[in-house]
Image 1 (cartoon, rainbow, N blue to C red):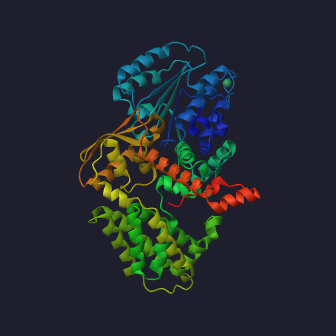
Image 2 (cartoon, rainbow, N blue to C red):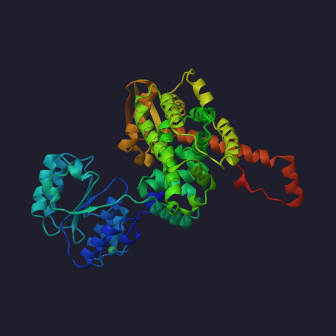
Image 3 (tube, rainbow, N blue to C red):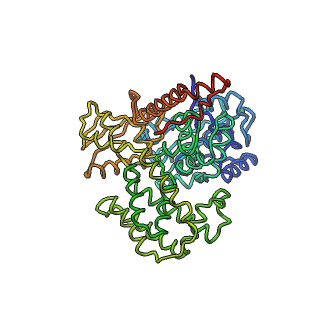
Length: 527
Ligand SMILES: [Zn+2]
């Protein structure tokens, strides 16, 4: 099947489709409409917010056969060729891989020649801050006296590194991070057009993990669809991203409200057994405390679901506003101190004990009702989900290949979010306690973001308790990554569950005698 990645398939082709950058679009469209063109444009903003997408739309608007228009037609041969990425007069350069002055000179030498097929010859330079100083100087010459037919469109995540002499010759636009509510609504639109069902809670989690980038959100959505057999629900997304079930956080604070230290430690044991990241849990606790404070002080700004969340409202009644402020501070400090704690477990439990020590006895009236129920629920959940037992034993087993060792290690690391995705989609080519070489397939290239690499390295070093050299590369992989293995296990369990239900005598009887039909998609394996 010819599957096209969602991020590529739904990449905006005109200004109207661009999400969350209205301020930039308005300025560009106005300047086009008034025919006030600049010869150099600079788009800045964090990764994945749409810089090169805007740049390509601008290139179409400047060269469309319909004339210089605010909205390119999208149908003429120029527009189509630019969409395909094969237009002779749009010269794209990734400065991250072409820092040599020679490449730049060669490119600019050609600037003097008239465009081949269009009005303007356009130089689109991505990550322009990576150019060497001499490459900037070569560019500056052309920028100072640009031929009539040349336009520069520059994009960067780091405008501070661009020489002022270049900056001052560009019309600058700053693209914003896209608010997650906008990402959620764009994802829902796309899913509706793709005919795929997803819960809004699941989309919120994806949008949050994508941190303001619609492109990352769509890549995650692609993986979510593959991961979850086309039912994109909250449970699947949590499993995929390694995000903790909110129930644990509620249970912790409910136990705190009851001054039940033993119950809190029981929950910590479950979290530990799940290889949850304590750093991440403290961060999530801070988010929950913020929500509790909001529920107490300005409840109207909570979204509708949260306004009707009884568990949240009940918990908010268990603490005074002062308590919540204090708890919030304790959690933030606990998180900052985590690095210096003897180990994560001590750091985390010390923070919990500090919460217990500092919160005066409050009168919590009505939370007892469901605390117990939820706790039992959590105990059973946690005992099910646990890979660690086998993971721990695996340490003693010798691994035949670097990748087997890597897969075993990943199951023990406490990773979450994009760092977890990077680990899961990496295949190990070399593995020792001093050096790990990881390879990521072209289609997961977006996971190779520097910050995710750094975070993974930090986690590996804290696991081994020493410096580890971690080398990432892009290339071909044999296909067995932790993610693939996890996926295979899930599919195998699902098939087993369906077979078990289909062969159940009672179910058979229903099917045979009453012409009943099994709703296969409702079958879920018990972990
Ligand atoms: Zn056109």
